[in-house]
Amino acid sequence: MKRAWRRRNYFIKKELQGRYIFSFFIFMVFGGIIFTLIFSLMSADTLTVVYEDYNLRIGKTPFILIKEILRADWIYVVTAGLSVAFISMFLTHRFAGPMYRFEKSVEEMLRGNFNFEIKLRKKDEGKELAAMMNQLLNMISADFKEMRELTNEIELKLKNASESAGKIGQEKETSLELTGARDLTGRLRHILHAHKIKNDS
Image (cartoon, rainbow, N blue to C red; front, top):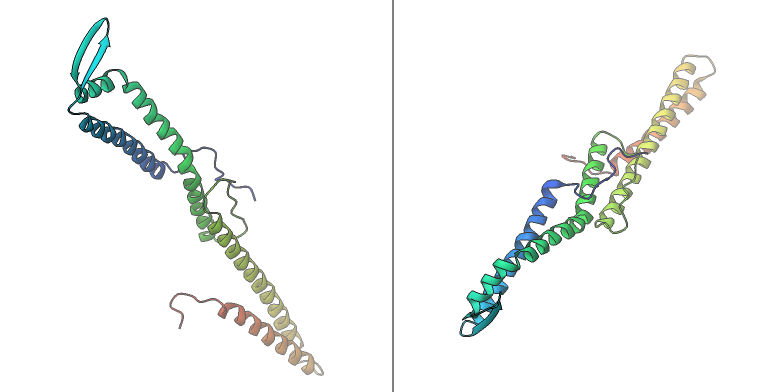
Protein backbone atom coordinates (compact mmCIF):
# COMPACT_ATOMS: atom_id res chain seq x y z
CA MET A 1 0.00 0.00 0.00
CA LYS A 2 1.49 3.33 -1.05
CA ARG A 3 1.95 5.74 1.83
CA ALA A 4 0.69 9.27 1.25
CA TRP A 5 2.76 10.42 4.22
CA ARG A 6 6.18 9.08 3.16
CA ARG A 7 9.01 11.15 4.60
CA ARG A 8 10.56 13.52 2.06
CA ASN A 9 12.58 15.89 4.22
CA TYR A 10 14.73 15.91 7.33
CA PHE A 11 12.81 18.65 9.15
CA ILE A 12 9.66 16.59 9.54
CA LYS A 13 8.40 17.47 13.05
CA LYS A 14 9.21 21.15 13.17
CA GLU A 15 8.17 21.86 16.76
CA LEU A 16 9.96 18.87 18.29
CA GLN A 17 13.10 19.15 16.19
CA GLY A 18 13.15 22.94 16.60
CA ARG A 19 13.22 22.58 20.39
CA TYR A 20 16.10 20.12 20.27
CA ILE A 21 18.08 22.10 17.70
CA PHE A 22 17.64 25.29 19.74
CA SER A 23 18.63 23.43 22.91
CA PHE A 24 21.79 22.03 21.27
CA PHE A 25 22.68 25.49 19.94
CA ILE A 26 22.18 27.15 23.33
CA PHE A 27 24.13 24.36 25.03
CA MET A 28 27.03 24.89 22.63
CA VAL A 29 26.99 28.68 23.12
CA PHE A 30 26.80 28.45 26.89
CA GLY A 31 29.50 25.78 26.86
CA GLY A 32 31.78 28.14 24.96
CA ILE A 33 30.99 31.01 27.32
CA ILE A 34 31.58 28.88 30.43
CA PHE A 35 34.85 27.56 28.99
CA THR A 36 35.98 31.13 28.26
CA LEU A 37 35.04 32.29 31.78
CA ILE A 38 36.82 29.36 33.43
CA PHE A 39 39.91 29.94 31.32
CA SER A 40 39.74 33.66 32.12
CA LEU A 41 39.45 33.04 35.87
CA MET A 42 42.37 30.63 35.77
CA SER A 43 44.46 33.26 34.01
CA ALA A 44 43.19 36.27 35.98
CA ASP A 45 46.62 37.07 37.43
CA THR A 46 48.50 36.87 34.13
CA LEU A 47 49.34 39.39 31.44
CA THR A 48 49.13 38.86 27.71
CA VAL A 49 51.16 40.58 25.03
CA VAL A 50 49.32 41.13 21.72
CA TYR A 51 51.01 42.30 18.53
CA GLU A 52 48.42 43.74 16.17
CA ASP A 53 48.75 46.11 13.21
CA TYR A 54 52.34 46.89 14.10
CA ASN A 55 51.24 47.82 17.62
CA LEU A 56 52.23 46.08 20.79
CA ARG A 57 49.59 45.86 23.51
CA ILE A 58 49.86 44.49 27.02
CA GLY A 59 46.83 43.70 29.11
CA LYS A 60 45.29 41.26 31.54
CA THR A 61 44.69 37.90 29.91
CA PRO A 62 40.92 37.63 30.60
CA PHE A 63 40.12 40.99 28.99
CA ILE A 64 42.42 40.38 26.04
CA LEU A 65 40.96 36.90 25.53
CA ILE A 66 37.32 38.01 25.61
CA LYS A 67 38.03 40.99 23.37
CA GLU A 68 39.82 38.83 20.80
CA ILE A 69 37.01 36.26 20.80
CA LEU A 70 34.36 38.93 20.27
CA ARG A 71 36.39 40.81 17.68
CA ALA A 72 37.94 38.12 15.54
CA ASP A 73 36.48 34.72 16.41
CA TRP A 74 32.74 35.44 16.39
CA ILE A 75 32.46 34.06 12.86
CA TYR A 76 33.83 30.73 14.12
CA VAL A 77 31.36 30.72 17.01
CA VAL A 78 28.43 31.36 14.67
CA THR A 79 29.71 28.79 12.17
CA ALA A 80 30.11 26.21 14.92
CA GLY A 81 26.60 26.99 16.20
CA LEU A 82 25.08 26.61 12.74
CA SER A 83 27.02 23.37 12.25
CA VAL A 84 25.67 22.04 15.54
CA ALA A 85 22.14 23.03 14.49
CA PHE A 86 22.57 21.36 11.08
CA ILE A 87 24.03 18.16 12.54
CA SER A 88 21.38 18.02 15.27
CA MET A 89 18.67 18.26 12.57
CA PHE A 90 19.98 15.02 11.05
CA LEU A 91 20.34 13.38 14.46
CA THR A 92 16.85 14.40 15.64
CA HIS A 93 15.41 13.12 12.36
CA ARG A 94 16.32 9.61 13.48
CA PHE A 95 13.65 9.74 16.19
CA ALA A 96 11.41 12.55 14.91
CA GLY A 97 10.81 10.64 11.67
CA PRO A 98 9.72 7.44 13.44
CA MET A 99 7.48 9.46 15.80
CA TYR A 100 5.82 11.00 12.75
CA ARG A 101 5.43 7.54 11.23
CA PHE A 102 3.90 6.14 14.45
CA GLU A 103 1.45 9.05 14.67
CA LYS A 104 0.32 8.54 11.07
CA SER A 105 0.04 4.78 11.66
CA VAL A 106 -2.20 5.34 14.68
CA GLU A 107 -4.33 7.72 12.59
CA GLU A 108 -4.73 4.96 10.01
CA MET A 109 -5.78 2.50 12.72
CA LEU A 110 -8.29 5.00 14.12
CA ARG A 111 -9.80 5.13 10.63
CA GLY A 112 -10.14 1.35 10.77
CA ASN A 113 -7.28 0.58 8.38
CA PHE A 114 -4.97 -2.22 9.56
CA ASN A 115 -3.75 -3.18 6.10
CA PHE A 116 -0.25 -1.72 6.25
CA GLU A 117 3.18 -2.29 7.74
CA ILE A 118 5.36 0.21 9.60
CA LYS A 119 8.76 0.46 7.91
CA LEU A 120 11.57 2.55 9.32
CA ARG A 121 14.83 3.60 7.74
CA LYS A 122 18.09 1.82 8.48
CA LYS A 123 19.39 4.31 11.08
CA ASP A 124 16.02 5.27 12.59
CA GLU A 125 15.32 4.82 16.28
CA GLY A 126 12.30 2.89 17.52
CA LYS A 127 12.69 -0.30 15.51
CA GLU A 128 11.62 -2.41 18.53
CA LEU A 129 8.40 -0.41 18.87
CA ALA A 130 7.79 -0.66 15.12
CA ALA A 131 8.21 -4.44 15.28
CA MET A 132 5.74 -4.66 18.18
CA MET A 133 3.22 -2.45 16.38
CA ASN A 134 3.55 -4.57 13.23
CA GLN A 135 2.96 -7.67 15.35
CA LEU A 136 -0.16 -6.02 16.78
CA LEU A 137 -1.37 -5.08 13.29
CA ASN A 138 -0.87 -8.66 12.08
CA MET A 139 -2.73 -10.07 15.09
CA ILE A 140 -5.67 -7.66 14.70
CA SER A 141 -5.81 -8.29 10.96
CA ALA A 142 -5.77 -12.07 11.46
CA ASP A 143 -8.50 -11.89 14.11
CA PHE A 144 -10.69 -9.62 11.99
CA LYS A 145 -10.19 -11.87 8.95
CA GLU A 146 -11.19 -14.97 10.94
CA MET A 147 -14.20 -13.18 12.45
CA ARG A 148 -15.34 -12.16 8.96
CA GLU A 149 -15.03 -15.73 7.72
CA LEU A 150 -16.90 -17.06 10.78
CA THR A 151 -19.63 -14.47 10.33
CA ASN A 152 -20.08 -15.46 6.67
CA GLU A 153 -20.19 -19.15 7.59
CA ILE A 154 -22.72 -18.54 10.39
CA GLU A 155 -24.88 -16.49 8.02
CA LEU A 156 -24.75 -19.25 5.42
CA LYS A 157 -25.67 -21.97 7.94
CA LEU A 158 -28.56 -19.91 9.32
CA LYS A 159 -29.79 -19.33 5.76
CA ASN A 160 -29.64 -23.06 5.01
CA ALA A 161 -31.39 -23.86 8.29
CA SER A 162 -34.08 -21.30 7.50
CA GLU A 163 -34.63 -22.77 4.05
CA SER A 164 -34.89 -26.36 5.33
CA ALA A 165 -37.00 -25.47 8.37
CA GLY A 166 -40.59 -26.64 8.14
CA LYS A 167 -39.88 -28.97 5.22
CA ILE A 168 -40.83 -32.56 5.74
CA GLY A 169 -37.80 -34.81 6.04
CA GLN A 170 -35.39 -31.85 6.44
CA GLU A 171 -35.40 -31.75 10.25
CA LYS A 172 -31.99 -33.44 10.48
CA GLU A 173 -30.40 -31.03 8.01
CA THR A 174 -31.89 -28.07 9.91
CA SER A 175 -30.52 -29.40 13.19
CA LEU A 176 -27.05 -29.95 11.67
CA GLU A 177 -26.97 -26.42 10.24
CA LEU A 178 -28.03 -24.90 13.58
CA THR A 179 -25.46 -27.02 15.45
CA GLY A 180 -22.77 -25.85 13.00
CA ALA A 181 -23.83 -22.23 13.47
CA ARG A 182 -23.66 -22.66 17.25
CA ASP A 183 -20.14 -24.13 16.99
CA LEU A 184 -18.98 -21.27 14.78
CA THR A 185 -20.51 -18.80 17.25
CA GLY A 186 -18.46 -20.46 19.98
CA ARG A 187 -15.27 -19.95 17.96
CA LEU A 188 -16.24 -16.33 17.34
CA ARG A 189 -16.90 -15.82 21.06
CA HIS A 190 -13.51 -17.37 21.86
CA ILE A 191 -11.74 -14.85 19.59
CA LEU A 192 -13.64 -11.93 21.06
CA HIS A 193 -13.07 -12.98 24.67
CA ALA A 194 -9.33 -13.46 24.05
CA HIS A 195 -9.01 -9.65 24.18
CA LYS A 196 -9.41 -7.52 27.28
CA ILE A 197 -11.31 -4.31 26.61
CA LYS A 198 -11.98 -1.17 28.60
CA ASN A 199 -14.76 -1.44 31.20
CA ASP A 200 -14.87 -5.19 30.61
CA SER A 201 -17.07 -6.84 33.23
